[in-house]
Length: 92
View 1 (tube, one colour):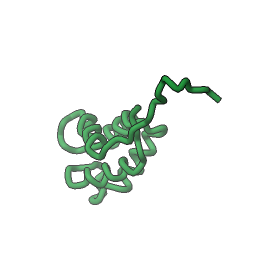
View 2 (cartoon, rainbow, N blue to C red):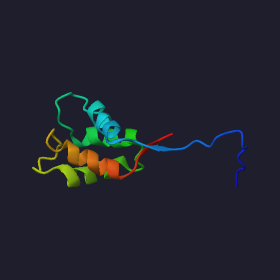
View 3 (cartoon, rainbow, N blue to C red):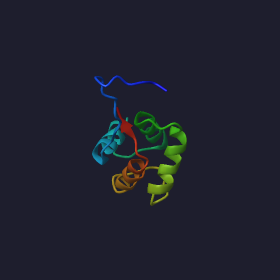
View 4 (cartoon, rainbow, N blue to C red):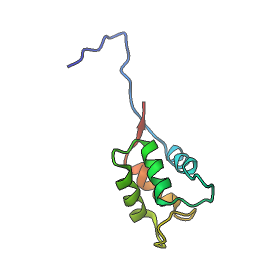
């Protein structure tokens, strides 16, 4: 077990906000068409720190793809963000 010196604060992980999660998805929309495909979602989950980004992209589609077209559009994005936010991704 590591011993922490009282003069050095321990790094604390801070949970990402919904807005930060949403921004990550926007940044991963590579073709800037306002629609996230599976590869773009996989990239976003990777950037968020998912251990299995492919699985998380698949689950994200399951949670948010209301019209079943295999993509997440602007109307569905909030559901995807809520799903990703519920996973508790953090930054240090």
